[in-house]
Length: 235
Image (cartoon, rainbow, N blue to C red; front, side, top):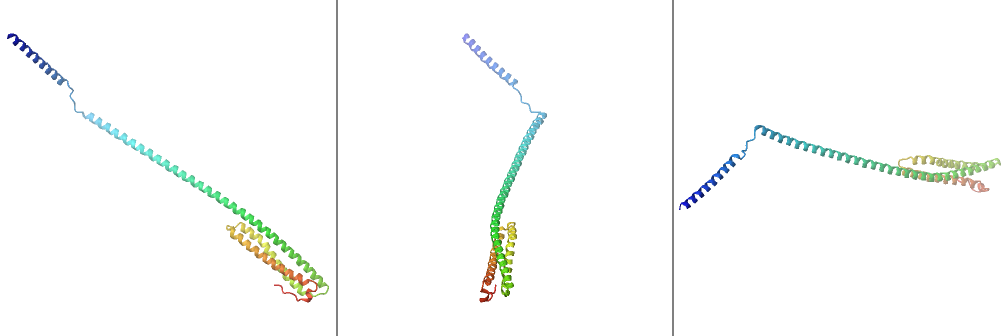
């Protein structure tokens, strides 16, 4: 019995010792744990300053990026303006080239038309020269008739009228040259050259009239013609 009591007492003491030791350990841990302190005024101010610097840096970065974007936009705008200027210059160059080609074509056309008209004028001049030769021969023949004592009044009248018509045709032919020169330098060459064509036709009509008048003189001077028939009245 005593032995059991001794064992129970020893167990109780052991448990009590363990509990005491655990309590001592917990107390030690509690006493040694760090205690959080409230931040000081200086720390708060430093933290605020850091936040302010961060915000300022972020704001500066945003402004810098904005300026970079604005510069890029301005550069793009300048590039677009330059491109438009280049396109405009190219269009002007093409327009000038087209105008030059058109001018060259008009000049070539005018030169070709001038050459054709001048050839026609040369033919008309030759016709005037031939009519003047016939008039000179008729005049010489009339002079012979007058020297032989014949009445040449009617023949001389016909010849004078014919020579007037030949002179009018000759003046019309000479005027064609100046009209051609004016036409090829005109702004509206088509209309001006058409006017030259019309003037050429009018000149040809005058030459036909002059030629008919010379033929009347020659026919009147044929042997026996001036005696058998009265003198024709030249128009």
